[in-house]
Length: 157
Image (cartoon, rainbow, N blue to C red; front, side, top):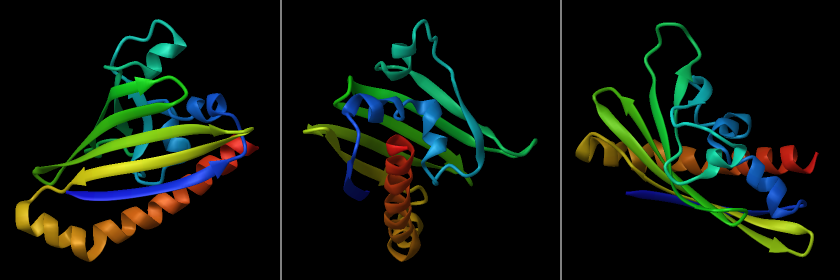
């Protein structure tokens, strides 16, 4: 299993950062879901807060008609304005790539210390481990830096 983790300080209160952690907002700042046009909730949403509740689920809608994308999300932990964890399963080439993504928000005066921790599991056994070692882990770390800067830019503007 691989792991990436990075923190950033965002010049905004946790409540404002929290808004960007809804599943349907991830495409606005994350680069790893480039095959998805949008993310649609598959769980019932009675209120805006339901987007953040444990059990909320969604799936990615492909950008191109006929393109096969099997991207599924489920929130498994949620503490409003403090921490949210979701599981992502992406079906690809006969295997499932799984990510457990945790976002932690800590108020620091008028700012938020934001941490992303991602634990991921590659499919395809030993071949997947080799791919991770050669390419995937390095790309995940690079993408994470970009994503946190994107999030910071959106929230602060």
